[in-house]
Image 1 (spheres, rainbow, N blue to C red):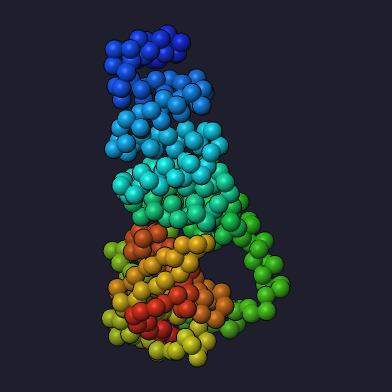
Image 2 (image 1 turned 90 degrees about the vertical axis):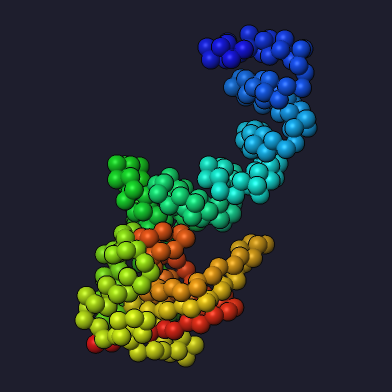
Length: 331
């Protein structure tokens, strides 16, 4: 049967499996292999019947649920596909490939926020795989989150500089980001221009822009602030007091300000799901002020960008525990 499958003689292969199943009707291997032949023939409904039988007889064989999820996707039955793949991932939480499949299931349905949750997971599991950053960047591109898309495409190109399609996609994201930025500058009621930002803060952001997607020193979060301050002759204690402390609730926060987190816990909602994050001891630089209390942070040694500098969003109101200190760099 396998020889016939290998030479694409599927009819003969099915006959061989039928003969084998006459002697051993509950053989899991025969049932699954017969379903695989039917999948190659694109007889998905018939394949599903045989795979269902295998799962009924061997419900503890969890990888069969992933196979069935792929089959449901081919049939366009996305709720069933998601149900099976999530059941599998409850037990194989570190399976990078299946998390990627899960993300693509959501992409098929234009559910990009759910897809991003899956792609965040594969970046955490394996930050050395450029495909993981590309998948997340593609989802960011679809949601018009162009800066994050640019960041992830850059990370992917750092890992695989020969991927010309990624250069093209990053160029598309850059062009759209510039266009959106022009509109924002024209219509935003709150606009932090370069004239508003202290000169030292501007220099710090210039340095951050030069290292986005790159590893600074050891890749520790503190190293980014160290280099940004030291290269610009800032005055600080060389440890965790990065300048003059400010109150983000009362004082204006600018790009280039530095935040030190200690024992911080965040709760936030995406759709119907509540997520939690912790920052036991972390340093980040404010990259952009979106509005009061909502910032984009530049930092490294994170779950989403590994030991390279990346950009992520942070909201003060999501903090439920811990301490934060905001510092204005000084000379």
